Image: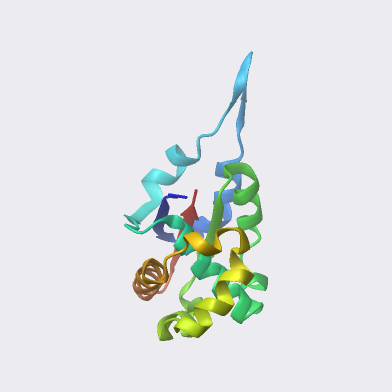
Length: 158
């Protein structure tokens, strides 16, 4: 396991450029170079790294998507480009998306945990820790609540 989860706050107006920035740049006689970090760094307003394993952050977003399919439908199309070019998993959260985080805010009961794990991560059933998931979900909600108008949150797990 042991994935890294980063939370990057940027201006909402920078989101359309993320896909272009993630595209690998061709180089002569060498493998393509990805300059995503160099393009992104100057535009970062705030950046945080979750102390919990990023897998639990990804499970949080999986839970949100299971609860309300509209969350996935409302994702910016640039997310697919980021996932393809950068690997891992990315989500873009805007202030309006807070409505999707209701289930996560309420926490997960032991019975719900027993229901969720086979659905979201059937191969990892025995290895997952419900307390770590709870801590990660509280962290996700805290960062989403930090969003201001005109900002977007890029969540990246990889």
